[in-house]
Length: 490
Image (cartoon, rainbow, N blue to C red):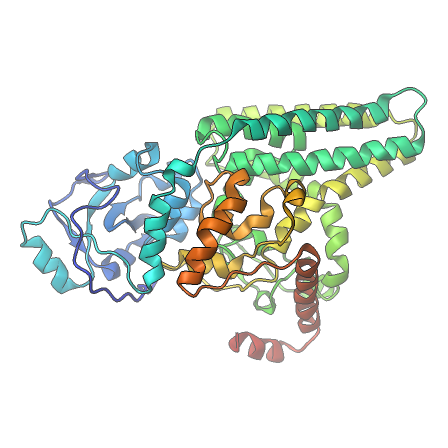
């Protein structure tokens, strides 16, 4: 794959932020070995994967399969700079940084001449900062200063725990209470759906390690609110969501916009795109054409039953993934069984088959609100082709996400997803701090650097998504040649 074009004029810094160790999984590395971006880009294969982080170069070939966040994000950044992606998920002094240091192979320099000069110099380091755009280095400095802000107010989650416990108990009481009418039973379905929607937000927080900021502890929280309360596996969620964040709205990479054959957010999918996540071609055949051509009508009904697909996706991943440890596979399968057990027992208390089916569909439709909310932030945004580029983290997140404008008293309804841009830029920021973070940090930063921040209302965002789906639906009915011309024009 071709190297990413970079232009640098600044002198090398003394040492990389997370560098220091001089060993690699393949053995001892030369002291002060130097590599240009083009040289790093040559190592972009599954069996030969190098990346650069903070001006240092690392050989991750033997780490990919053991990466707790899944192998795909590392594969997508093979041969490229992943400074911002690494910082988004890991602190400078944590376990991940220590692991990264053990795969150090050298320093990143900007040209062969710089490499020759650095190797003959007595200077210990040769890291270069990215200065294609001033905001790149400015954002990295900003992000480094946020480490002390990644502290959670546990009162926030205590209040959520109490309110959600009451909500769940109310849903159960509406079902099992003596003499309750059908209307009361359906009220229980609505309350259960809201419970699912709200607990999924907590699972989202846990998946990012944004609650305790200890991935092991947050995994256990995710296991409870994800697998046990929702039937959605925390490992499935982190596997897909890490990829989504690291390649936001990539045509080939981002699973959150790859919904063929039922939905296509861009006519580019009519070229039967190969998914680097699913490892298969998403064929645009006659069936896909028929489904996509009515997607602006089918979108909301699909969201109403989307939870059933998440059940299936979780079970498929647990059954087939070779990257999940056996102990975790058994644990998650066991907790999933507990979910289906309690849900089955609850539904079985209803007096008739008609009520059981109605209760199941209504509760899942209400719970499907979160699927709509997730789609609003991305479906109408710009889709780019290929893997994420070096030093384009800020641009990628700004073009692939948008906030939802809402009053503070409605923050509970959106669960942090209304601050999607801020969340994508800095995923470890606790959600109860995102509103202040947006107003006091992100907006001033974007204004200073002339970067765009989109923030439509909830209803305006729904309309944007509907228009996007309608445009693709219309294009699906056109001739292949015309669609190809549209794609070439962007």
